Image 1 (cartoon, one colour):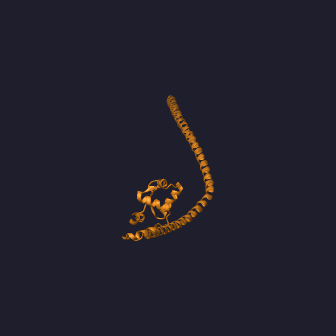
Image 2 (cartoon, one colour):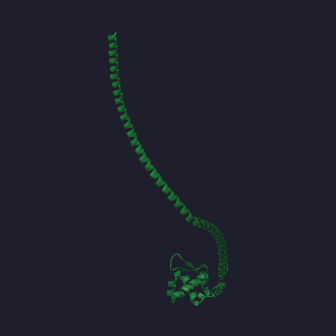
Image 3 (cartoon, rainbow, N blue to C red):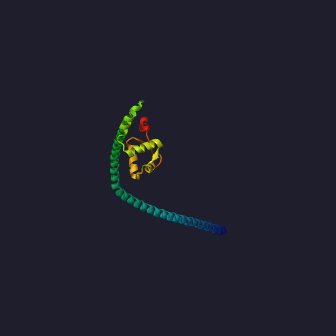
Length: 237
């Protein structure tokens, strides 16, 4: 019995020792796994902290930029307010100028209408002057008469107001054709100013025609005046 007990105790001791050894082995294994897991967790935490710091730095940079942008926006708003205050008086002036321009446009329209009326009146006056000139020319020339005895009477009436020099110039132009004032001056022995006034007078009174294509102008006797300037056959004989 005692031997059985001793054997049983030995078995129990052996079992206990084996279990203790196995337990110790499991504890060491678990410790090693714990150390590995701890290192992995530390690595993860360290990596996470690094990422967190980088994100924090980025966030700080973004926040700084946002603050700078907000400051610039605030400055821009202040400038806009200042510009609006400065431009407000100009807006009133622009409105006043626009209203004034409308008044000027109305006045210009009125002036344009008056100019058209004046132009129409001028054309009417021009037409009347042309008709009057035609009547004067008809009066100067008179109706064409075939009887030679009547020509001296018409000639005397038409040329009665002319001086001898003016009549001589008309007869010269009728006989020799158109001439300039300098050419007439050399023939009649007058000064340049006197000759110019004489030619302008004969032109204004309807005795001469004037070519204005080039300077100096050329003067020629009108056709109806050429008939008047022809001397009667009795005088030529």
